[in-house]
Image 1: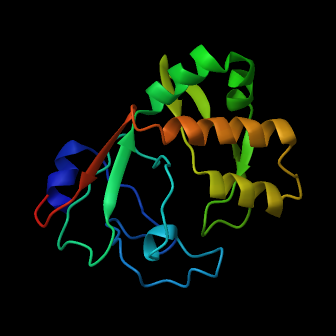
Image 2 (image 1 turned 180 degrees about the horizontal axis):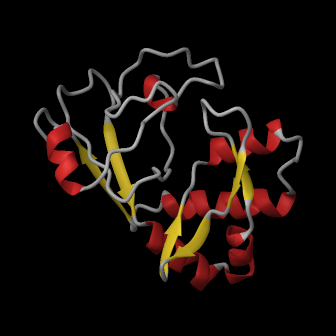
Length: 168
């Protein structure tokens, strides 16, 4: 699976340990903020990964749950643009992201343009944790904007739900 991925591009680390392949399984302590959500059996909210291509390979079906969903980041952007344009500028302002394994949170916008193309990154929990670590509370307007992003992301009309079977 790793070799197949190398044909698609350069691999990036999945965590502070430097893993190039991550295992989605319940092996972490869900009560600790440092634990990656994919290492627990908790709901993993919509988020982006810091790569151009993401792949999943199902080894075995979850005993319980296991539904995966995807939604287009560009579609979320277009929905915000069409229905909530007054919030769009917030998504271009840098906010603090806590990257587990890094000493301090770094600043990054949710949406930006890179080489003329819409780019973005989002994981609300990392934004909220980053702002908390830097002692910069999330404002009421920021919370409203994040709520809008989450609501659009979860819209059943916009997402694709899938149950991964072994070999998928």
